[in-house]
Length: 379
Image 1: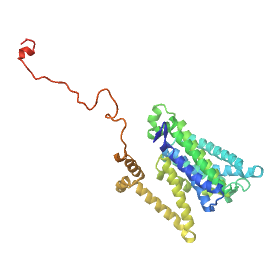
Image 2: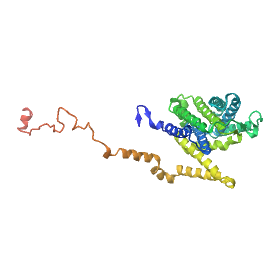
Image 3: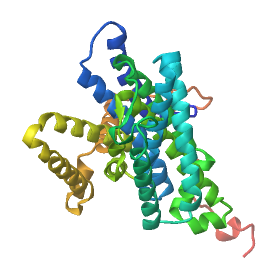
Image 4: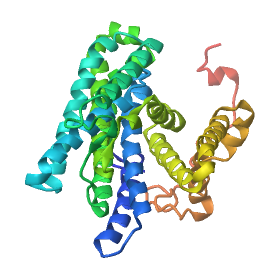
C-alpha cells in the first residue's frame, strides 16, 4: 500500500505500539485501574524493547557481536537513578526530574560507548565480544564496590519509584522515539553505509565509507539507548543493584535480537515482548522449590523456538504456515476476478471515429494476365 512516498509497512510497528499505549493509557487516564503486576509487566516489556532494538543496531545491522549491553544499561541506571534521588528534595518526583535523569543517564552511557568503542571497534568477532563482556563486568564490579554514601555499594542504590500509573506511558513513548531514531537512521545513507560494513568491510572501505566513523556512530547510539533503558529501570524499581546487570542479562538481550532475526526490528520487538512475558510468568508460577525450574523451562522454550526457525526438516512447514503466506492469501482473495467490476475504459465503450468492431482489410485482387503484363512488358 502506497500513498505517495508513504509505505504502511514502514510504520506498522509505530501503529501497533501506539494502539497498545493508547488502550492501556486510556484505561488509566479515564479512571480505570490496572493491577500492579500488569503495570510492572508493561514497564518491563518497554525496557526490553528499547534494549533489543538498540542492540540490533550493533549486532543486526553493523554485524558486530557485543556482550556488554547490560554494562551500558548499568551506567544509565546508576547515574540516572542517583540524579533522580538528588533532585527529589527540590524538584520532587515529577516529569522534569525524570527528563533530567534521562539526559544524564543517556549522555553518560553514550560517553562510555565512545570511550570503549574507539579502541574496541578495531577488533572484530570473538575479540570484540570478549572486550565488551569485560567492560560490562568491570562496570558492575565498580558500582558494587562503591561506598554506601555514593552508589549504595553491595546493597544497591535507593531510587525514587515513579508513579506506576504513568511510567509505562513514558516508557512506550521512549520506545517510539527509539524506533524513530533507529529506523530513520537505517533508511538513510548512513544506514546503508552501516549495512555495507556488515556485508563486506573491505569493499565498504574501498568505496570511500568511513568505517571507523560509522562503527562508532552505531556503537554510541546503541549505548545511549541502553542508558535510557537503565534510567527507566531505576524509576521502575526502588533499588538498583549491580548484580542485575551481569553477563547473563547481556546474553538475554542478545537472545531477543537473534530470535527476532538479525537486522529485523519488528522481530526484535516481538521477541523482546515474548521473552519478557515468559520470564515474568515463569517467575510468578514457579515459586518456592519450583523456582529452580524457571531457567530450565525458559531454556527449553528457547530451544524449541530456535529449532523451529532453523531446522531444515521444518522448512516446508514454515513456508506453508506463516504470516507472510496468510497475508498473500488475503491479498489474492481480494484480487479475485469475481470481485472486479467492469472497466469503463474498455475498447468497445470508448467512443472513436472508427467503429472498432469493423474488420479493416485490404482487398487482394487475383492474378490476371500474363507474367509479361504484370512485369510491365519486361521479361
